Image (tube, rainbow, N blue to C red):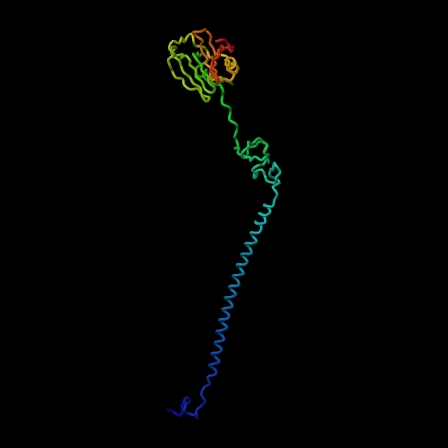
Amino acid sequence: MNPMDPGDPFDPTGPPRPSAAPKILFLLVAVIVLAAVAAGALVLVASSDDSGDEEDAAEVSTEDQSDEPTETAERAEDDQDPVDKPDADADGVPDADDPDDDDDGVPDAEEPDEGEDGDEGEPGDDEEPGDEDPSPAPDLLRNDPRPAVDAWIDAAGDGAKAVEVVLYTDYGFADVRDPDRPNRILEFGWRDGAVQGPESAEPFPGTDLDAESFRMTRVDWDALPGLVAAAPERADLPRGEVTHVIVTSDLPFSNRFIFRIYVTAPNGSDYVVATIDGNPAPR
């Protein structure tokens, strides 16, 4: 070894060895700096989380504030008294929501709407707008036979001659001479307000068409309802009902043209006669 080498540990006379204190101090400073950096990073992370929480809280607060006016308006609407809604029975329940708005103990759905439930007859309850009582069915015997008769005259012509007319309450038939073929007849019907036919047909065997035909315009049709009303008493069947009427010739018994009015009762049936000018007559 070189005894002059200052790094020789075996040379007690050489210069002193460098101290390790600076290195230790450097290491301590480095550790402190690293700890400070780490602490700063933690502070930044925590600050970021707090900021996010504050933003979420602000959003929730904003939503709550935006909902509050709607809820307030709904509560105000619920608390408002229905002063503008009809309340016929003054029970505090508007008629539209009251199942018995006239307070008569009968549900509105089970009673007709006659204006007594506060709506003055306006459609309501189980009534649909536009609903009206249907027109009564025509009664050709008791009310007016003209709907059928006039329809046949329009179809056959004013001068057409009938051989026989049969009327029921709501339908009827007319046998009219065929103007184009005098030896035949045209069979018309009438039902539900409309003429049916005609159908060409042969007359009943032995019928004298010239002697037994009559103009429908000659008949006093307006007298028929009165004749029908009096027929049960005339037939001595006061509990009876008139079922039908035949307008025809009375041949071979007489030269008259007659109403033959048929009556049926629980204790029997019969017919009475009147001339086509509206006068009751013997059989």
